[in-house]
Length: 200
Image 1 (cartoon, rainbow, N blue to C red):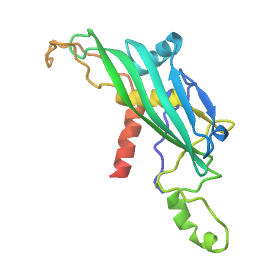
Image 2: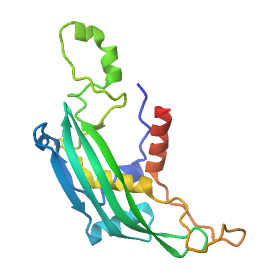
Image 3: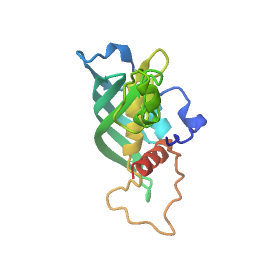
């Protein structure tokens, strides 16, 4: 089974700037859970600082949580307006974003990933039954008390959707006189690249 990439403790282990917690046990096969989130001004300011934005005028999401055996799936979309510094002129550049949100969460002790289940065929033949998840990758572990933080999940998807080289209207390609703009580390970009490599 492929190992997960190492976390960056200084960035990923901090308390979420925007938190909205749902208990996984509240999601049943008969009763999916629909959630509409809207980040308030304080949360948007905190997320903007985390992601290196000039500002975050709007951030909301519409999500639905469904039960899949021992796992809970999160699907839906987020909408946001972000303001970044132009990579050429440093002028504010506002971008409207709308993208999908996906997540898959489970208690690792209650759900067996497919790759592990294949290695446990001998145990299965002995009479023990396991829930075999169709995906090869492990689900994300649930948070404390069997929870899913939807605010943090949306923030991670927003980070992945940000324009990497925002440009103001009329800004050229830059050159020797272009300002040297420091970049803000984004651990989620590295995580996305790792996942794409695993799926290749």
